[in-house]
Amino acid sequence: MSTALTTFVPILVGTNYQAWSAKMRAYLSSVDLWLIVSATTARPVQAGEAQTNWDTADARAIGIISLTLADHVFRKVRSLVNAAQPIEATQLSNLWWTQIETHYGTISPSQVFDLIKQAINFRLDGSSHPRPQLERLEAIHADLATNQAELPEFVRSMILLSHLPPTWETSIIQTVMSGGQVTGITWQLTTQTIIRY
Image (cartoon, rainbow, N blue to C red; front, side, top):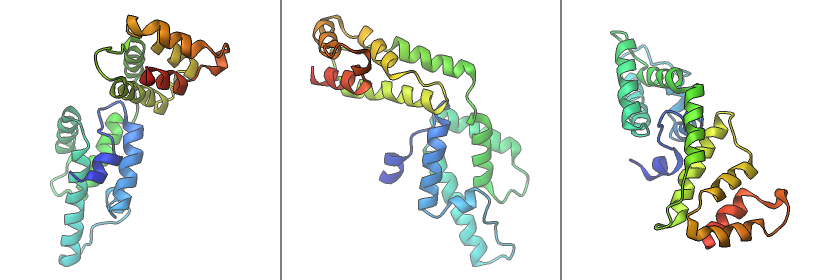
């Protein structure tokens, strides 16, 4: 998998469709494949080099999309594509895209509930570095935000502070709350204080 792809496009796990689709669309545009995937550029009718090049680009787009799907998402989409595919499908990358969009494009209330539960029940492990843990929590908050269920910054900070390892609590909570005003308690202040500690 190319470094640019893995750096810029998140893995689609199901609940992060909005973030994934925006990044994937940008990536496909950057490698001149979005017009094929979006069915803007039709497959040439005449057999020959142009048609072969188009087919190769269509297959390449499917490969790129597939590499950014979590295993369970890949299996689901592949089965949807196989079930929907006409005998002589020519724009397979568009079929992949539309099946992903149809199946994962809207998040259900139960999925939002699950994300909120993950955010509320998140606990920092005091035996390992907090940065990767906080990045996982920020990914959950980003998924909530892209699905119009963003928790206010102050609430996110308070939840995080309430789930610190007991040995960290006194020092970190005092530092974060030392400003004396609710508006001064930001997500950035809270996470930076934890990382510094």
